[in-house]
Amino acid sequence: MEAADFWTKIKEKLTQKGKTQEWLCAQTGMDLQGLRNRIYKNRFPTIEETLRILGVFDTTAEAFFGISQAELEKETRKDVMLIPVMEQAFSAGHGQFVPDTEEVTEYISVPNDLKRFGSKLAASRVKGDSMEPTLFNGDIIICDLNGYDGTDGIYTIIYKGNGFVKRLQRTSDGVKIISDNRHYDPMFENSESEDFRVIGKVRAVMHSM
Image (cartoon, rainbow, N blue to C red):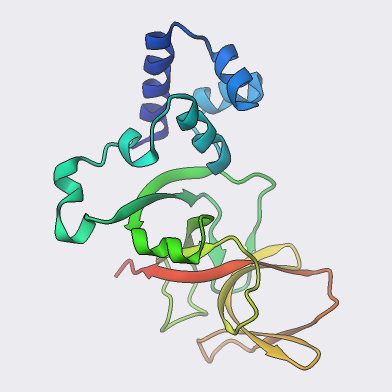
């Protein structure tokens, strides 16, 4: 579903209820001008805003975004949930600028069993080749938003203001930031650094190739 279609359906539901955009903002805590800007620019609301909006209309993401019963009964999609794809791409290379706001570009279906990693899941695209042959340019990674879980693995991180997807390995005095592609040298950051923040761990990959 495109953002324009999302807002068209929301407008239809408001009309059915005899309510206005002002009412929707009052129910969800959203800013009216921000809502109108997203509608005008064909942008999805944030994850939290989307869930609040759907809650107002007493519907689920699966129902609203049109996963039919026939689709749900297919073997490959019988247990699915929808998660947002963020506009932010994470660099498997030299760093990707991190914007001030998180924009949702679309929603995708993923296996429902990923819920075992928590309710906060989001997808982003990989940009660059430094994580090959594990991750490739254009792959979609699905990660939790729970920060560092205490174990080594592949994470999305903010490092010196840029977004990366890298393998993290704990050391006695910090963390080693590793690229699976041997043409890239590892980086190191001490445990007290303010230039390093873990967003969450990569839990699944959808390869583009």
